[in-house]
Length: 226
Length: 308
Image 1: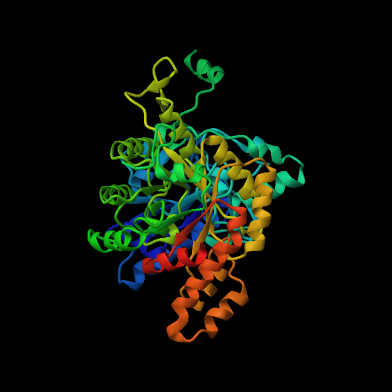
Image 2 (image 1 turned 180 degrees about the vertical axis):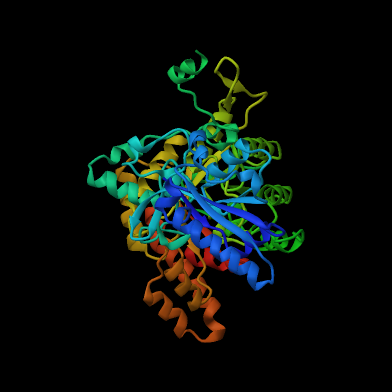
């Protein structure tokens, strides 16, 4: 899932300066699960905005709404009110939702209420961790299912650097060394020989360096043409 | 450029290591700024003629400073053979390969391939990490350039052809005294397979652990000459800091005690003795020592005298 964090309230208030009518729009997808962009968070944020405006002697009509997903056109039909009627829509979807809605409603000012951070999974109560970087060339087959691109702070592909200490990364004593995890996993599985192969430099064109990434499933694309 | 370099060897360092003598290298760190005279003068006064080559660190600990290539060139101009250190943190494969060609045309032959400390350790923690290649990738790139090609492909999918190819003496680093040494050795094996011809290690203060490490290196058939890293222990506080914070470096309590017990005026003398004793203890297991004196360059002649 995509994990995102709420922006600091001061940053949100600065974005909304001069806005009288604001729609805080939640997303029922990933950000609902990580408890930052769901229906409840939208209600809370809307009331925070009203209170903050009041404290400044201003008035803000901040409403909230939630649709199933902000990354699919069809769900926008469920909006309770026309977004064009607001000075701004504060979307608390991930950046995909914010960007997609901006494209769907070019005349509406859609603002981000969250900072989209990573592709992760739940690792404990209220805790999410990054597992994938979306590099476009999955190498988990030979790394024991542990991603060196996402889990190594340097995204190295040929093994550990000299910055590993007690299984932790030089970046932080709280951060596991990704390559230490890979090594332990492959050692336990009796597959350390996987580590001996020289891995060529990644093709970063498949990552962000190739520019905008798109995917097309031919069967569906053909159906669309018919 | 070098007096001992010949058709067979591209640098004096390579010739010295091939000659079977115990080889010393030194190290200087470029300044943060453009005042290069002090470090060049120090190198000229204390390292020239005493060490086979002088490493020039590349934006060490991710603290922005003058680049390694420029200072390596200035060293060469003054008759000292540089080991151009190259980290993969700050340049992508275009810039790395281009700087390798640049280094070659400036007469630089020894190149040490390193990953480089993460930017979060330095003074520009907001900088974007590059790490397009890792150290194995950088060694492969050097080997590729030597073959007359680069890492790119032409329109037919064949490697691009260079107009004239360089020849380097390619080095790499390893951390021998880390608590889990097997992953380090596996990576070292890959570095050598990718083209590394010599090894300079992270600081070692435990000769027994180093002996064990070297035994494992040779058992795995890694035959590149290894120069043990000697970092001058300047203060007890520095030793404690390394023990708590520097990965793969362990200074034994006995060594720290010895320095602590020395009278203040004798500390530098004791530091020199510790370095020289470490070299003497590890000499039987390796081919040279890489002396990192952290600004105390004036101690190098005495360390070498006591160690040999």
